[in-house]
Figure 1 (cartoon, rainbow, N blue to C red):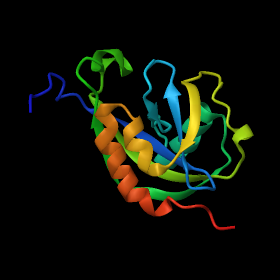
Figure 2 (cartoon, rainbow, N blue to C red):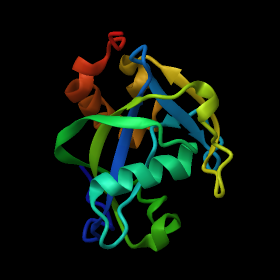
Figure 3 (cartoon, one colour):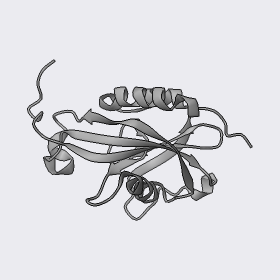
Figure 4 (cartoon, rainbow, N blue to C red):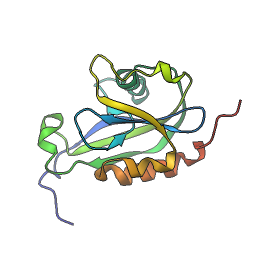
Length: 163
């Protein structure tokens, strides 16, 4: 493996959100700043002085317009991913090599009408619900192994909610 010119940079602390509907499908959205067919789950940085759980609710509201959720699981570990070298200077002021994230699985308690990606600072063009096992096929290649790990860790949640 070739060493990155940016390997001495730190990881940006962040959170990731696997939002599951009552049928056990996962929310994914297509980023405004990436004109490809790459989809992702909501995620974002942890602000100074903020706890990861607080960041989850803030990021979800900022990106999806909803907070009608409950936490149903938390990842056992922090996950990290490295950005491709060409992207590092363009993201987060070139200060980070990637992100180190705590992931949370949340049950969506609202209806589709409660999701509004046209937020104050929109990040997404489109969104949809997908089966959990399809997540790794939808994500950008540099996050694929992270998504494979998340699917493995949260696989027990991949079922319809009992009513």
